[in-house]
Amino acid sequence: MFKLKKALTSAFFIAAFCLAGVWSTAVWSASTEQSCTSDSPRQRVQIDRVVDGDTVRLASGRSVRLLGINTPELNRSTGQPEPFAGQALSALQDLAQQATAEIAIGVDSQDHYKRLLAHLFFNGLNAAEQLLERGLGWAVVIEPNIEMADCLFAAERRARDKREGIWASPIQRASQVSSGGFALVRGKVTRIDPTPKYIYLELDDHLALRLTRKHFPAKQIVALGNSLGRTIEARGWVVDRRAKLKSGSTYKGFLLSIGSRWHLDLQQ
Image (cartoon, rainbow, N blue to C red; front, side, top):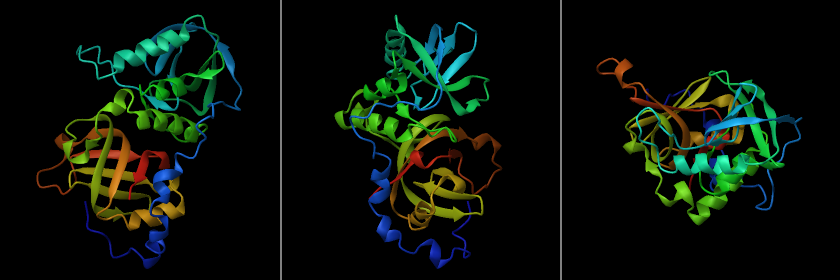
């Protein structure tokens, strides 16, 4: 990771103080009474089986990866499920029982596993929202599928405030990251490296965040430029790249790519 470039202009930092405290609350703006519904066309489907807390297989043979949520991994191959993985599976199975199932396919309709990316509704209610309300998963956004993002993050917040499910445990420190996979971490910004396409932030001198500029409003980009020494909460999929780095490399062994503004919270 390079040192903060001299190319940073003063405009990058102007008025950053005005944003203090605003970013942290921006994503929780949805009403607590709001139900996460979609204006997108829905299609009736038949569920063959629930694979895990965020994936179902349809009678047609297609798999659907639920938009808006990531649930703990079952890790069937190792027999060591993550905490609350079984509960998330059971909860989704219960919702699917004797229910009318519909999906609203995302703008980006397929992931790299060829699964459909869609919001899933049982009897008209958003399945991801119901699991998030119980603390059985983390709200996530896979751009450009941003519909209902505010509402789903608000559902997560309600569970978090009650310390339900996964929120009963403290947030992992960035300095404690030791493997790849999904993570929600909190750490202090120890270095910043802006490039034309990305902004790199190092947390706790251990984990690198790579933020895609196009997914962040200009005001948040300004705030990032003034984030040195501040605490950030970030979520997403960590890549363990230690084996690929050459000896003496200045890059951090763990990289977390941030492709959505909802996945980053610059705290006070």
